Length: 515
Image (cartoon, rainbow, N blue to C red; front, side, top):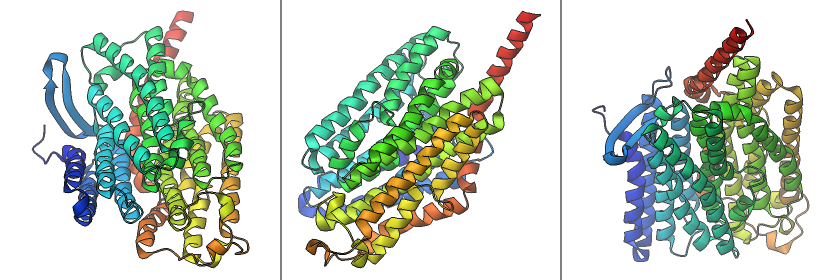
């Protein structure tokens, strides 16, 4: 342990304790509760920036490590640490939460102190997921997130909020149960819950297969992948705007993060064997969900389906790596693809969060999410129309936006190993352009005919302040993605290197057996 401030613990527990104090301030001091909650999230974000400037980008080793014995009898430790991937996702979490609280300032009227408290606690638990190096600690944070999000959807959601919140809870909880069985098995095998120990654990083919599907059950629901995706559109439609933003921007990434932390290092052989299944399901998500999004009449539902399609690129990029390294020895393609998947995760966080925020702006004025209730909005809300078109374009992967970088790198990597897979994945880009433009045209353009739209006020300074940072980041990382790529670089190498070594060992063994 170092002598430095326990930065990771601070980033986890500051928002959780801040949430508790916000809750205790109560409804009578609602103004104070909101201001306090916002100050806590800003402080958490500013502290998280220290991670970016303090991390050594030349190594994939876990940094800012903290370790305390927790349950020594079971060898369970309070073990924290971060690498480049974790830091990027923590920064995304802390930054997004600030914007969510700003965006929810006036839209949440009923029991606002409880809403702000739930958001703060959710932030702390999500940061915990990205820091945990002990499997039990990871599992507690992973499951703990469900509770505040369940409350946020169930209390401040739409008319079918109870149905949506229960569906969200059951789907994600059921998947996690299988993961828990896998974690217990690995503990019995190794005597430890340390993730680094598990990565070096010798497991036979049958063990790896069962563990792969245990992890797959947990993380595929979180991403979500087809066919366990149906909870997401329901949850998004019923959740308040802030809940939708957090769900899309951060919680979906935890599934992708889980694959990188568990499936790829712990069960690499089974991941290689079953990579075709994940690739197939990812391609179905990219193409089929594109068709589904095209026919949606609810704006939030359309963007929710678009999130499933975009996360299909992340899972595709993560698992096609096995085909590249093990079968072709194509390290460069694997590197490109995996980096593309990482950038896609971060970029999707900005863009989907912004898209849901834009829908929230309209909903606050009209209390409708249906596309047919709008048309000609550009005439009364020109600023909004400008912001919305940029995010719609970024969602479609327009060059010079961060959405383009992630998809382009992924497709470049995939083209090197399988042209057909790349061709099918590329159709997803075409679909995303189709439904993004289709949505924009129907909502923003056309004649202003509906009386209810005649006097819509344009965006308030608070709404502008919420969306402007997302525009800046989307364009900045689209033009200059190097800060993200440099941050990810060593961690990507550390994922690819063992796969390459295993492939070389397998080849040497095969050659020896032939002689």
